[in-house]
Length: 265
Image (cartoon, rainbow, N blue to C red; front, top):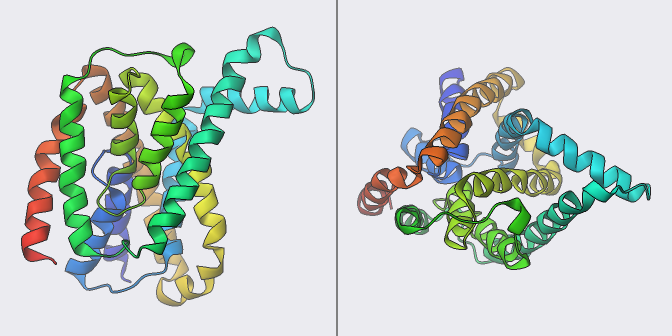
């Protein structure tokens, strides 16, 4: 892999991980166009780790609060103000468990890497985003339900299919389930943390083949580019959610799905 290819993949990963257009689907299309062939899964995971750093930075106060409350709970020093945060931690655990079950199931079906599936997934994600145009103002953290955590976990599990945006599917599912836009966005990226860390652990055995195909300097540059582009993309997404223009990305995804279905299968 050249520096140019590494930089391009990093930019795509950083932008598409946060904007609801599917980073895995775009990386698959880009590799097909550039003729890169098979690259170890760990390369994708390491770029996801780069975007995780952005999530930790943007939501650092919320994440720090949840970690402190969790340690207080484990140390049996819970305070009267910890109830809402402990409830959210349980919701995150439920969403993560559901995601894991569905992700394993989809992986066994061999859908990952199939360009036809990816094309249809682009179109499906676009239609899902478009449907959020009709949702009404929803509930905040204090009114989250167990059904919300289950629904969002299912959406994140489906988001493991290239072409289905993880952020797009989880945020849309939350909004359609009655959760307000900003809560849906924040919850979506917080539950991405255990999901991505879990994927990293599962793919650590791929590390040797990764560095056989991608040199450490190229990997480092791609990682840095992903962090920078990811920061600007997440900042943009937060503003779009606040303005209620999240559905705009459907006007990009649906034509993209049609194009890839006709010309890249």
